[in-house]
Length: 133
Ligand SMILES: [Zn+2]
Image (tube, rainbow, N blue to C red; front, top):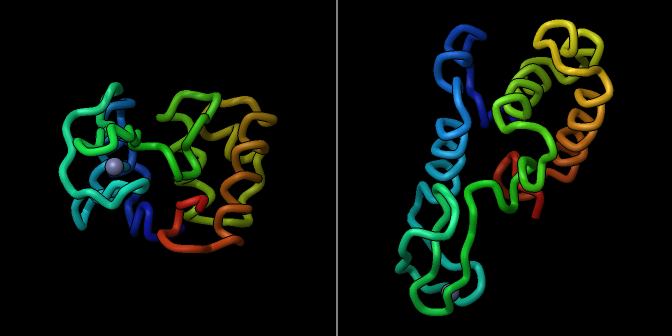
């Protein structure tokens, strides 16, 4: 999980992930850093998928979004907020959700729920750090 944000400072983080598209771009870059491979048929050619930054296999038409198979998939809060919570948890897994809530102004219950998801993901630990597989 720490690999997701490296050693970014809070200031660098805020600049880098200031909007949803930047977050999606980052996930897409990370996910397909070794190139696209379709999860269904292993085909390597893709075209633009139906959502921003998603990729569609040109053979079987399977569409994969930037967030699918990551802890950010089907996240009920804005991606920028989810990224912020993930950032604080990665920096310090023992941080309390009250503190996160206080720092980024997101409801404590929201922080708690998403932190729980992140920690589960870290504990499962398979493959890429933030992947849920
Ligand atoms: Zn395919």
